[in-house]
Image (cartoon, rainbow, N blue to C red; front, side, top):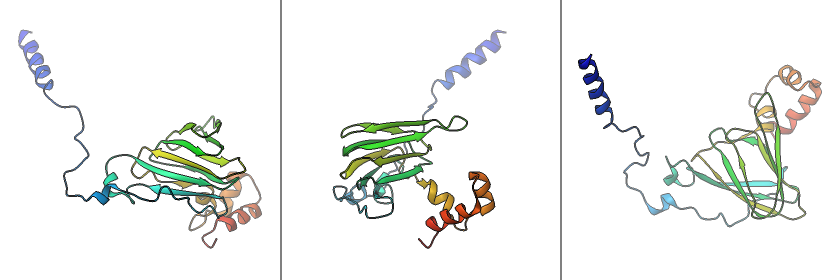
Amino acid sequence: MSTGFILLAFIAFSFSFTSASDPSPLQDFCVAADDFFFTGLDKPGNTNNKVGSNVTQVNVAQIAGLNTLGVSLVRIDYAPYGLNAPHTHPRATEILTVLEGTLYVGFVTSNPDNRLITKILQKGDVFVFPINLIHFQFNIGHTNAIAIAGLSSQNPGTITIANAVFGSNPPISDDVLAKAFQVDKKIIDYLQSQFGMKN
């Protein structure tokens, strides 16, 4: 019995010297200052489009130095009544701050509740959109609005719901969508014509 106790104590003692943390993801390599720099976030994006908004991304594609750091940033410009359409980020939580204007924002919880959580935000207000939940922002004001958002990934990804469902290439079958949305196929055809590859 004492031999078993001594063996157990030795094993426990040896584990106390092991490290349980991950190694630093930052790698030693030669970089230039421009790998950590982006210019132009002060300039408004073009909101002259069907939804009246524009997202300027600052992620690993724009700043190579973000690689492995797990963060990115976006500027969102909204025309009056402009919409950042319902979408999701499969790899990131988003925290949004309103710089100018008034936004109606919200997200939908997952099945089976599908509960809508909303808030009206004014200049200086902050709202969090949890990872991979469908969310949106809508400018309810008569003037332009601006927001900045931080995301918890260097490459958060974006799936705009309407574009993905009605604008996929090749298109999702009318039968599938008509049954899923419980509407006539003509409505599906119309919606696909609005989001198809030719638009």
